[in-house]
View 1: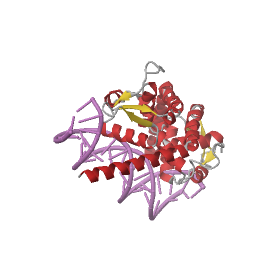
View 2 (view 1 turned 90 degrees about the vertical axis):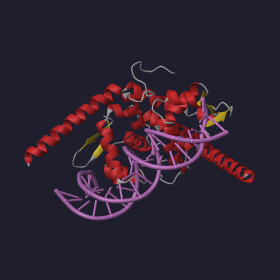
View 3 (view 1 turned 135 degrees about the horizontal axis):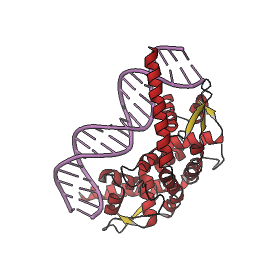
View 4 (view 1 turned 45 degrees about the vertical axis):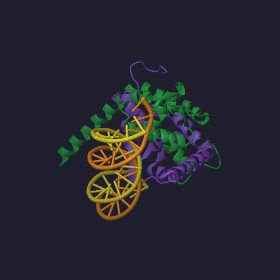
Length: 130
Length: 130
DNA sequence: CGGAATCCTAAAGGATACTG
DNA sequence: CAGTATCCTTTAGGATTCCG
C-alpha cells in the first residue's frame, strides 16, 4: 500500500482515520465544503444552493463539520458559516471529486447502459435455458 | 461557483453528476479503488484488506463500480478485479482523500475534544439556568 | 473460494410543524 | 430567518445460511 502516516490507516476498521474518511467521503460534506471555500455563507444560502438538502440534514452536516473542526459558525446572530484552516485544506481533494463527477457524466452513463443491456441479455439467456 | 462542465452540476438534485458524486464520495468506493489501483486483486484479498467490510457490501460495491464503468472483472473463474481506464482516473482524488484522513487524525481528534467539552459547558449552563 | 439469497437492524435522510 | 422537535420512510449495511 502507498505509505502516508505510519501510524494511521483507513483500512483498519477501528482506526480513527476510517471515521474521518467516512465523514469527508460524503456528498453532503463535499458540496458544503466547496461552497464555503468560495466564501462564508449563511444557512439559507447553503440551503438554497445545495439543491434538495433538507434543513435537518444541512444542520446535522454543519454540526458534524463543526465538531470535526472543519467549519465554524461566525456571526452567531446571522448564522454565517465559514471554513477553518483545517477545512480549507479539504477543498482541493473534494473539488477534484466534484470535477470528476461532472466531467465523466457521459462515460458513466454509457457504462451503465452497456451494463444494463448485458444484464438484460443474461436474464434472457437464463430464461430460455429453463 | 467554480466552472467545470457547463452542462452538469452536482448542486442540482436531478443532475446525473449528483448520483456520480454520491457513488465516488463514499468510503467503500475510496478504499476499493485505491487498492485496485495498486494492482488487480481477487475478491478474497479485497475482503481481507478492507477490514470490516462484509461480503455482501463488498460484492454490492464491486457490482455498482462495474456498472458505472470503473471496475471490471477479469479471469471469471478466479474473480480477479481491476480498474478500467475510467476507474484509474479516479485514484488520484480518492487517494488524496485517504491521505487527508490519515494526516489530520490528530487535528480532528483535538477539534472533537474541544467541541465536546464546549457542549458539556453549554449543558451545564442551561441546567443551572433552569 | 466467490458468491447469491434472505432477513434484519441501524442509520441516514425526508416531511411536517413549531419556535424565538 | 435559523433553527428545533417529531415522526416516518428508505437505504445502507450487517448476520446468517446456503451453494457450485
